Amino acid sequence: MTNTTPSPREQLSRQLAEAVAEALRVDLARQDNALLVVSGGSTPVPFFEALATCELPWERVQVTLADERWVPEDAVDSNARLVRAHLLQGPAALATFVPLTTDNPTPEQGAEAVAERINGLAWPASVVILGMGGDGHTASLFPDSRELELALTTGAATVAVRTPSQPQPRITLSADRLHQAHRHLLHITGGDKRAVLARALSGDDVRELPIRAFLACPLATYWAP
Image (cartoon, rainbow, N blue to C red; front, side, top):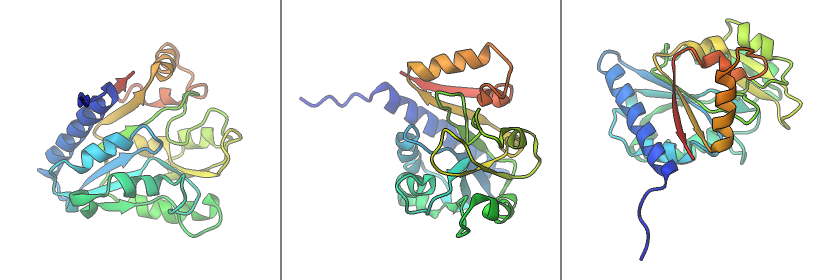
C-alpha cells in the first residue's frame, strides 16, 4: 500500500504557497500588478510546484529573483531555468518573469541593464521569499564576498558579486531593494539551517551572518525538518 501522507517539507511547501497566494490576492485587490521575489536552489522546488497550482490572476503577477548565477538561462544551475521549469507552468505561465542576466559576458557589464528592468517592476514587492545557506548568506550576500559591504549599503537595485566560496560570478538584488516589500518570508529546511538561524538571532554582526540584515523586517520563518 502506497503511503500518500505528505512529508513535513511537502506540507510546509503547501502552507507557504497558500500564504503567498493569499498575499498576492490581497495586493491585487488594490493594485494592478503585484511583484513576487523568489530565491533559487533546491529547497523551493516543491513550493514553486504548489504555488503554480494556486488560483490567481497570474497575468497580473510579476516574478523575479533575489539573485542569480551569471550563467546562460538554460544552464543547469540557472535560477531562471528553475523558476521556468517548476513555477511558470500551467496557469502560472501567464505571469511576467523578469530574469537577472543579460548577454553580457560579466555581471559587472550587465548589472545596469538588469537594474533598469528591476526598477520597472511593481515595488514594493508583495512578497520577498529568502533562502539561507549554512554560512548565513541570503540572496548572494555572502560573508566572504568582497562586494558584501556594497550590497548591504547601496541604494542601487543590483550588485555584481564575486565570492571565493562560489564557482560562478553572480548578480544579486541589494539589501535595500530586498527590504522594499510588504512581507518577508524565510524558507529553510533541516536541523543545520535551524541552528544557523538560532545563531543569527543571538547576535548582530551582519557581515558574519548576512541573514541578520532581514531579521527585523519582520521575517516570517517557514521551517521543516
